[in-house]
Image (cartoon, rainbow, N blue to C red; front, side, top):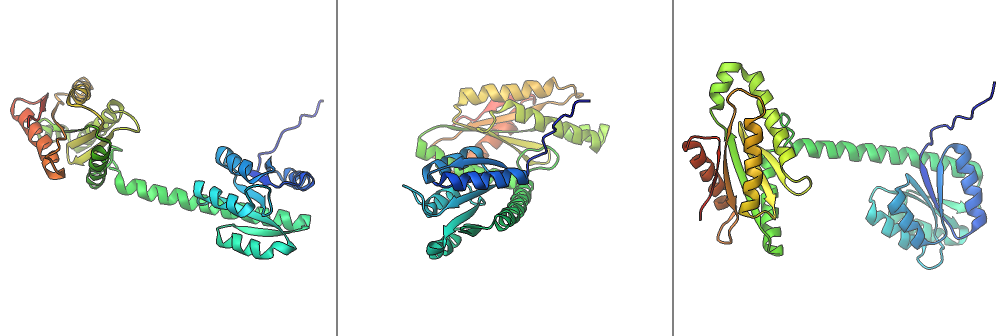
Length: 304
């Protein structure tokens, strides 16, 4: 029976940045044997480029490099990725430089000539540090996401709405572009909840969250659960007519979503120079109430 070689899963990626080919070869063989995937660079400039493109877990970098030295490369790499783990390689004569590199954010340093077992030990320890930092970053991102997201709909929440709106108004004024706001709520939602129950009402809210997400432009616009059965969408760089198309798409998609008598009343406002945040929100809110009191299931545009 023919034996098949099954490659084991790599521990992680390591980038070696050293201008000495013999040193790179020795370290690569050691780390390959330990189960690491290894890339090489011979200059600081090349190391920075590969670090940005390949995102290795660990970088082993000589302090003395031609052109951009290791300390400067470390600084640039840490600007790109503040939690990047970098181990500096240093000759005895440059111990002071290694200490300076630690102050600049290096994870550790290894003296040349190095012992093979010591190098492997430091790399393995640094990998553990990297995994801890990545998990901490992931947890912080999750806490941040939960703090600005509505649990039920997956849209942003009321608090994040005002924070984003303030920054978008500043950006609009700086870039001389347009900004439109949709505000809408569900027609006769209390009656629907009383008739079908709150679980079914939650199903409607969740579905509307999905419709809003799919109707607006990803990574450009943003959707919000403003509160209760009220929603909002910030449309970046959208004129009144462009916003009207998006509003109409949201309205018709909700009407055709398959829920019994579920429709929405949408108010639309385009930001004008004389407005502040409060006036902008109020103009869209007033337009929404006009749509609702005109029979619902329609879009009404604010007229200055």
